[in-house]
Image (cartoon, rainbow, N blue to C red):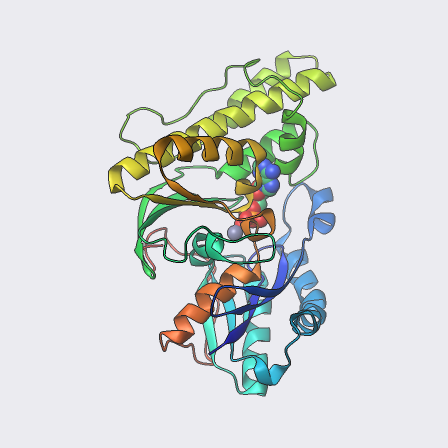
Length: 345
Ligand code: KG4
Ligand code: ZN
């Protein structure tokens, strides 16, 4: 088992990768559908799966070509099978099953969150993780759909430490962006504007910092506070920049505080931050400063491995295939799972 082809279509990104057993990303092609969903202000599930259908096979062909290997040199196929949008998952799973069947390759269905938690250990020309053996670690998964911390004792052993009780952090960015009149998704735009704003200009709430032991997150009140404040202000560009910087700071403060608590509770020495919100420049900077101060080994992958991507699915896939696991051709996607119920994820 030297290398796998991986497919990720759980939401609105179509992504295909070839990854080897050392975690090296031999090829990765991801196509965002922001252009499709942006005008609607959110993801339209029917459009997401229709676009996966037209984009996936050409992306598979391109990725195999980019990897420099041919089908005979691909030893297995990994695909995100849960959780996600059912129609989107169906396109990836059905394509992966067909490819596995036609090419007589072993198939493995992978949990999307398990993929995110391992994104920090992928290797590419521009990124080398500081260790190959990071276990045990605390993983903070922050995206548009998820915000949770996990205690990862070893590969395959996950325990949820805290999760959002309402909105995900990415959702908090996107909803505030909508209030400010930005396109969808808004996280990157808020990040850009925040760079020229004053993070101390507005005092946004830091939800669920009390009680001091709480590891859960809550972001819906922050969005409401943002909405009420915006109604009272004249929105010039500089006011918007200050709002973005202050709002972003509140989210980053909460994430770092919860991470610190998770590390204290578990006494681990390594932390992974992953998911689309891990692209945020303020979070990356503050996390690095916090890790240096707290003597924690920090893994934050480059942005292309933080957002939804097939490389992270390939890494988990090859690890599982090497352990002798595989899925059969009855594999079917599962859209929802209660947090913490499948292998602790
Ligand atoms: O992981 P991801 O690509 O998809 C999900 O599984 O949700 O994450 C997308 C989320 C969106 O909410 C987007 O606004 C946010 O990640 N995001 C950011 C940044 N880049 C993407 N949030 C804050 N700052 C960024 N630079
Ligand atoms: Zn994701």
